Image (cartoon, rainbow, N blue to C red; front, side):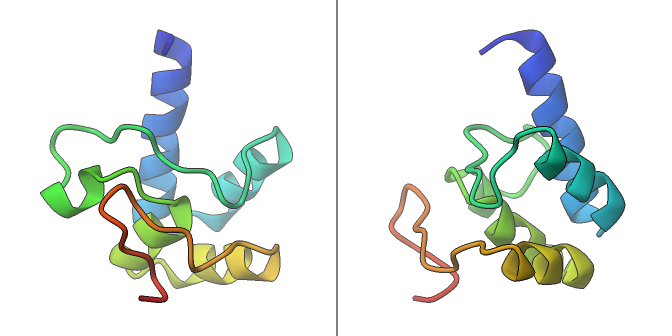
Length: 90
């Protein structure tokens, strides 16, 4: 994975954590899927978030209501499991 893409994903993590729906909308507008799976996350994140989560699960973990609402309104699936087989819709 190239450095620019990793930096973009770190920014996406921050947008989701801080419920920055406007920045999330820009990410989706430039090509990120509402069902995008974060392949890696920053090392300072809780272990639970290091299991290749869909972005909606990441946003839900941080209680980012506006981001979750936006993702749902734009067709994000809640049953995509992480690498451990866990999804928002157990």
